Length: 138
Image 1 (tube, rainbow, N blue to C red):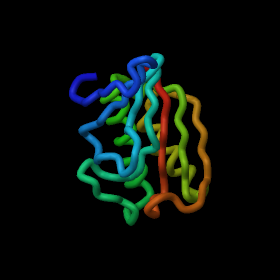
Image 2: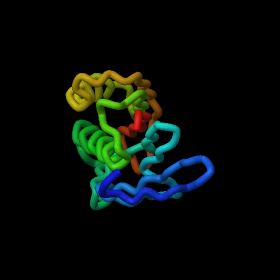
Image 3: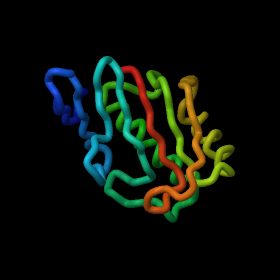
Image 4: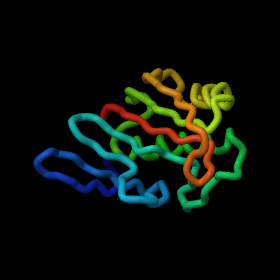
């Protein structure tokens, strides 16, 4: 886990919360990534640039690209990668955006084919159109 700040949150459990310098600071009381038991858990990532700009007004495709870049940055900081993804959960404000999401996601994921759920939610935080969380091998 080079380049990031990994802080054991509970020495007994071996859980490690990972600060990801390539992402904007979390907006609440959470970590972008946590590692434990050989697994990496990526918190829900939103279309927020590393400098903290919220892309709520950007086109859906731009929001998806930034969100997936954030997931990838968190995976890498936690010592994982797209090829180690086990499960991805996608939250969309409108299920009509599913085909566009799937097209961008397929290019991003490449040959990796983790399990996935796509959940239509209605409005998301800050007016975003997409949020993605993931679980991967460490």
